[in-house]
Length: 216
Length: 216
Image (cartoon, rainbow over all chains, first blue to last red; front, side, top):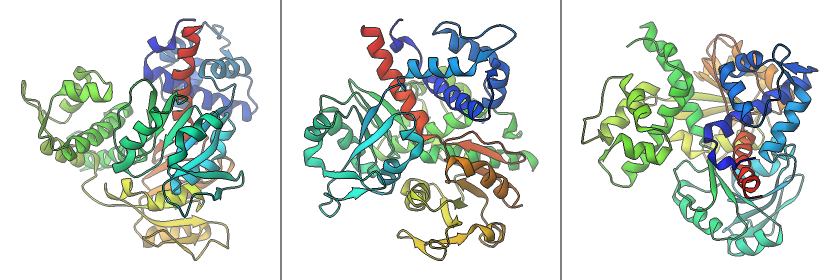
C-alpha cells in the first residue's frame, strides 16, 4: 500500500463516518449494505463512497454491495482502530474529564491513560470509573514516555492552546494531536485534528437561520 | 436572499471554519485577508473560498482581499450568530456539564440555559459558574417553551440517543439538534448536526497509521 499521506484529509474523515455507520448497521442486525444506502444515511454521493473505498482495493460486489463485517474489518485496518492508542489529555477541566469517561472512545481502542494539569489541587487525583490519574504538566514528556502515549489532547482554554501544543510536540513519542480549544493552532512534524464544538452549532444555526430568511 | 436550504451542508461547515479563522486573525491584529491566506490556513482551495463567499454577494476586492471586520459581520449575519440561541442539553453527565461551562459557545451567543436528566439525584442542582439548572426530563417540553429554547443537545449514552431525539423533536419550539452520542440518529422536520468525538480520533490515527504503512 502507498503512504496514506497522499490521500486527502476529507477522505480520512469520511472513512471514519463510514465506520460509524457500519457499526450502527451491524448493531441493527444487518449483514450487507449498498453504496447507495450508505450514501443516503450519510448524505454522501454513492459514487464518492465507491471511489473512497476503492483506494484500498474493492470490498464491494456490484449488485449485492458490501459485506458489513468485512467492511468493518477493512476500515479498522486502514484507520489503525484494530489496536490500542494511549492518549494523554492536557487540561483536567470539564472536557478533559468528559474524555477520560467517554465510552465512545474506549470501544474503538482510544484509551485516555493520563490527564495533565498545572493546578496543584488537581494533581495526584484520579478521574472517573477507570481512575485516570492527573499528573503535573511539568512531568509531561516523562509520563508520555513511561505510559507509551502517542496521542496528545489539548483541552485547555484558547489562550494556552498553542503553548500546550508546542510542549506536546516536544515530547518525542507524540505522533498526533487532537485540539478541543476553540482556536486554530499550528504544528510541525505531527498530525493534527481540530474538534471545534462551536463549529457544529454555527453550522446548525446557519441551516435554521437560512430557513427563516428564506421564508421571509 | 434565497432560502439557505438550497446551499449544500458542507458549505455551512466551511462558513463556520472561515468564521473561526477570521476571529483568530482579528485577535492577532490583522485587518485584511486574501482568499489564498484563508485557504492556506484551512487547507481549502482559495477558489472554493471565493465561490462559497460569493453565495452571499462579494465581500472581497481583487488584489486586496477581504476586510476582516466586514467579513466577520457578514458571516455572523449569515449564520445567525449575531443573536442569542438558548440551548437545552439532555444528559447532565460529563459532556453536558462541559457544554454548560464551555466559553467557546457562549462567546458566539450559544447559551446553555437548562440541563435535563432522569436521575432524581441530579434534578434540582445547578452546574458551573453560570449556575445552569438541571430539570427532570419529564418537564422537557414545558421548560423548553418557558425558557425559549430552540436548540436541543443530545448528551446521553448511545442507546438512549434516538429516543431523546424523538422526545426533543416532539417539543414544538425545537428547531435543531446537536448530537454528541456516538451513534447515527434520524430526525424529521428539524435540522441535525452530529458531533462524534471519536471520528476526529479515527481520522487522526488514519493519518498517523497510514504514514507507518507507507514507511514499511
